[in-house]
Image (cartoon, rainbow, N blue to C red; front, side, top):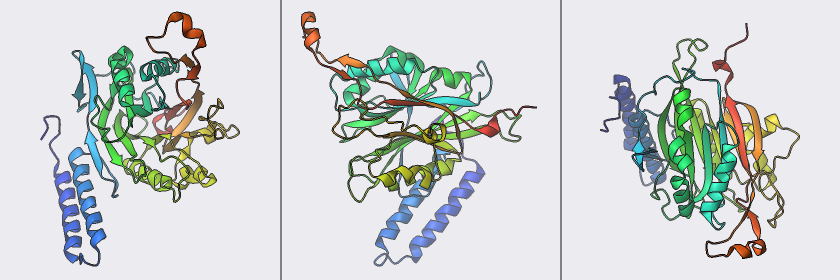
Length: 374
């Protein structure tokens, strides 16, 4: 057992024992020739229950088995695995401030010169104010290297990944960043972090993590901490039938429900009109439509550089959380030239935006953890 793991409590042992007895009974009563697929579904449920117990992380009973990983912190001139097994020392506010800002952006893995584009994107994020969480999608290997070499990221952020181990055969992954200042100031503990493989034609997954927030106990009697689950999602692209996006989002929603509250945000890739109802159909709140019901909120194709109409591909969906503010982050134009290009030739080099997506920022909180006016 890792030195960072707390000893399992008797409750955890009893819970795990009951679940194992239940599933083993089902296996004994199942005739494998008639219900071969059901056997594997039960085995997957057993695996998920054991992982849930071992990681002390509530997980839904689904066939999407989680693969746990570690947070990373830049220390002693290198990125190192980091496990937050206790709350940090009290910071300025000593308790949860009531809301936090999340930023989500698709980086565009196919565009050239990832280092220049990542640098430009981070400069825009810096202007949004004190973001607590950043979701990035379509991060290529070169873009990840550029991200990890950035001094601002090294100094101020925890990252979900510090090497290419999560790529497998994929050309890009999603990355989650959490602000060190926010964690220290609001007394937040980084919980478990894991990926779930989604049913996908493109090998997509969802990057999940839990934040354990020191609650304002004066406003929630008997509760000292609250779990917020964050899911960084990149749903399947294109208008391919049957669409797997409904199933993908329902899996994400089940993980939020298991935690009690949370966010699923990122590139939802809605194509047909029925995709517009997926968030509501999964009992989630679409932050943009709640705050800006009369604005289209398009985040892709807005510069006319694509051959398809502009669309609101990127979304922030909430479960038992409330949005208090939300906006769109604009891209800037870069001259895509190599180091070998002469200075005199720069005027002839075409300019392009550092991503084909616009970014989103959203301020998120929940009502019961805020003081009520007297």
